[in-house]
Length: 116
Image (cartoon, rainbow, N blue to C red):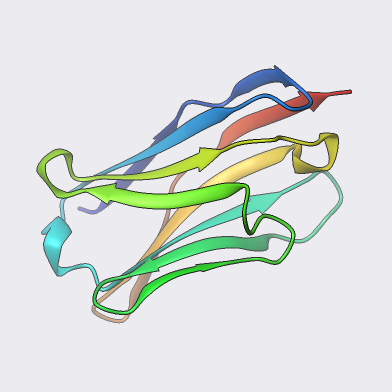
């Protein structure tokens, strides 16, 4: 059974930094071809934030490009999102997602709140 568990969210002041983690289990981590971060603010749709695709590189939403960095640690079966220069508009629940063998899996999310 595939499970994704996010952690690392919290309350931070504008201009600060946080690193989110997404620990994967029940799947061969190195076989995952693409892993994404999304975020959802109250009353809003779920928006794409960042993607890491093996052998293809990384992609970012324009709103976070240059401030956020997505990476993986294969030894720890973990996906990361390093977030710098945080802004109040980055406040949301952040979720990781993988697509594996035709199925889509989501984590439960971790709350990030940026105060002004």
